[in-house]
Length: 390
Image 1 (cartoon, helix red, strand yellow):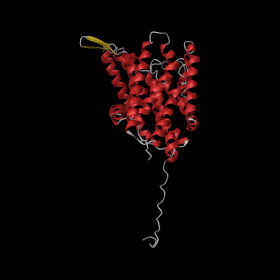
Image 2 (cartoon, rainbow, N blue to C red):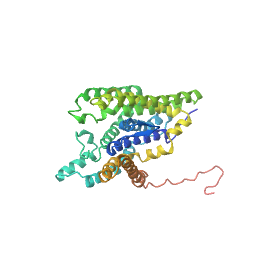
Image 3 (tube, one colour):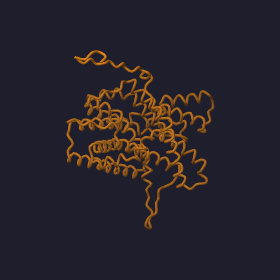
Image 4 (cartoon, one colour):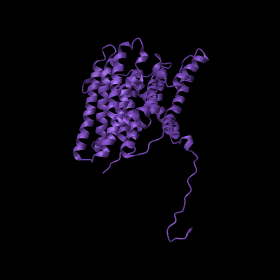
């Protein structure tokens, strides 16, 4: 008996919702300057670790991208589902990313407060952004206003090489995954000692390729196991345990990361092998969530997290700019906690607005070469013994 995965993977949406919450809370923590030190029962409980390591949400985003991109390839391999051709793949990536990105770039140029010394400087900044090579620069031109766009450059660069990697991955999944892990760990080991002098070495695709490959690896095995094996109660128990263990180990690793924060270059040094370890826990969560108990999948794919997933891209584009602008206007009259709440609501509000009034209408557009095709004429079927036209 063959079991096909559902078209929309709600637990994956849940992970994406968690990722955007981590990133937003991290930047709200930095801009709003509110440290979550909460009084209860006569004591103060400090939760600074939670927003303080929120930058790990970017790593979760990269894993999710690898999973989502390779998932159709896995279904094609094991279920015979048709794949989009390369132009259609490119169109879907373009229409999802570029229009919203161009709009926020226009806003940054007009209202970002960056003084352009010449038209050529402005043209250069725009070209760097539109070329998705922002991560190659040692200093972000809009670093004080919107410092998050470097990761989109890494993402788009992965899109460019993904079709080639996917072809190799379909034939040699284990070897390709191992090769990506080796490349990433080696790159980080070699470059980390020089990032203080050459900061542009850090946010490069080779430094994160193991996260993308881990997502592809998880998608491959999720589909393969689902197709080849019948569901059984012990599988559900084992998978749920795998997901819970993955979550527990993720918290353990993030706790170790936070504990190292007093050391110089703590984030960079941790990433050498810690990022690879984190990718393994992500794989465990993905496999466990695919085959785990329904209560776990529903909890992870709950409507709130799915909503955050839907608006995640535009929240990512807008939240830091909104945070900085609101902080400049309200920071002098609001305490850190209400300021943090206000800028967070503002970031999510702008993200939701542009998702539903810009991104989603555009996503409904077919590629130009598939529009206005005439419907095939219906040819009447002649049944033996029946007169034509009867």
